[in-house]
Amino acid sequence: MAKARVPMVRLTDLLVLSVLANGECYAQQIITAVTSASGGRVKLGRSVVHYALRRLERGKLIEAHWQVAAAGQRRGERQHYRLTEQGLETLGGFSQLFAGLWAPHASARLKEVAGL
Image (cartoon, rainbow, N blue to C red; front, side, top):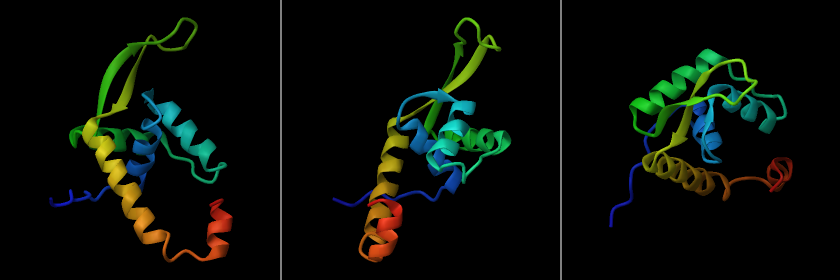
C-alpha cells in the first residue's frame, strides 16, 4: 500500500491545524492559543490567521460555520472552524514526518531544551 503524500503547507497553516486538533474555535482563540503555547514568542496577526483559515478551507482541511456568540459577548455571530478528516490526516502526516526527521538527529541538549 502506497503512503499518502504530505502536502506542502505554511508554518502558519500547521499552527492553525494544531490548534484546531484540540477542538473547534474562532480566529481570536487560535491567535491566543498560539501565543500562549509559545510562551509569547509567536504572535500571529489577525490578517495572517484569516488568510491561513481561507487557504485551509479552500484546501478542504478545515470547515467553517457561523455560531451565535454567548450572551454578554461583543459580537452576535462568530465564524467557528474545525478540522475535517482530511485536515486531521494532513496534520498526522506532518507529525510523523517531523518525528522521523527530527528525532534521530536531535542532540541530547536540543531534546532537553524542547522538554522531551
